[in-house]
Length: 121
Image 1 (cartoon, rainbow, N blue to C red):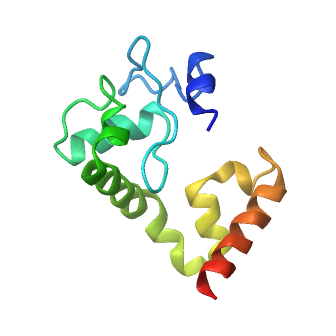
Image 2: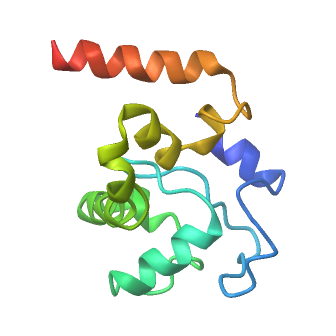
């Protein structure tokens, strides 16, 4: 919800990732079913999926439903799948490490677990 505002403040752009430089005026906040965030994810995702330069056009992930799910599957297989056997907490950390390392409120992690349990029921 607050992704565009955070992007306007320069959040979600890690300038130290020089291989995937942020484009002027573009925001790399969460988009897609598993919210793709940060320039260092948009760059390789676009490259690996042959979707063009998602650094220049990150909004495509929100505008194209097929791309949104392709990006989510890309993120899962690239960043999350290897931690899946380590348990739900490890999976949460792989999706959003801030929820499990004190960066965000632990309430968010508790809510994520509750949502998952509700879904399973």
